[in-house]
Image 1 (cartoon, rainbow, N blue to C red):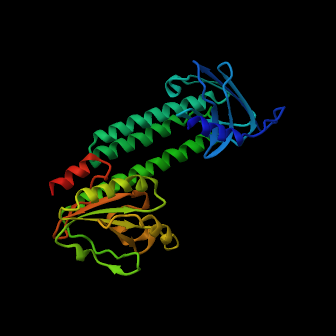
Image 2: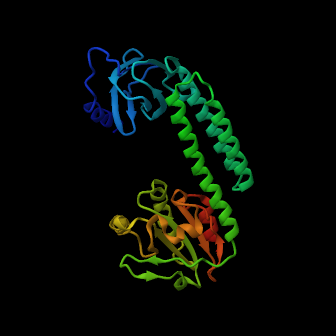
Image 3: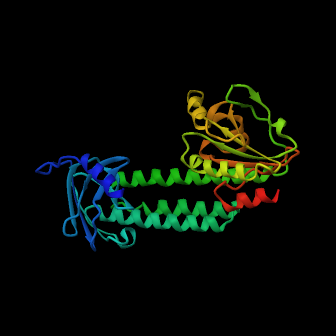
Length: 332
């Protein structure tokens, strides 16, 4: 299947010019070890070049724009920074691309730094997991992360655009992490309090009150059809609803699609079993369920568990794919 896919990708390869132009990329990739996999260069989902590796060497000369790209070899991939008019050489062992990569020639300093920053960020992610949702621990790590990564970019010898791109990346990822921390802080303050009043609608457009579910535990999934992580969790949520259908638990999905996207929502829920209650927020990503529980649309998906009296047991309940979710529901 993989070979067929790569053959299809080959069909879309750019015809390489015979001579380099000032805005051309001159890329050489040296691969140690035998491989039958073609090597591909992608910008987002756009294939910039793909071909078989001959004698452990891959040469590509195509017009590109300055920016970030991904080099793929089979299931392995690596992010690189490239610029037209500058020769770049990348070397690695085919068995471990990221663990053995070496950059030489132009932009070597930028690519080495980007790789070391990715490793640093990965280490921070592992430490965040060790915080076990302790917001003080997480906030301290995030502050250290932002400070240390931005300090790495203060080298004036680096390409100016590279520094600007990386700084934007650092701050964007930091904002996402801050959303998570803020949501945890808010969840801690909400434990034991009554479920806030929120406006929700069913697929027929009728207003629905969460009060109608009092007397049951309620496991709520707040999601959207455009949210990748939400869609990943969806089958796990459905599986839990089917597994615990005989327990006193209501499984409620609240979609925050915008009004123009409500048809997408209705298509997504067509095959949901009767054990899942599907509702929609009142103002898309500005729905009051978002403002009451989360710090913004970047916080989805999030999960809430209510007690039969309508009080909040956990405003940051485990995701359906996490073993803790089944353990929690089983204990009710």
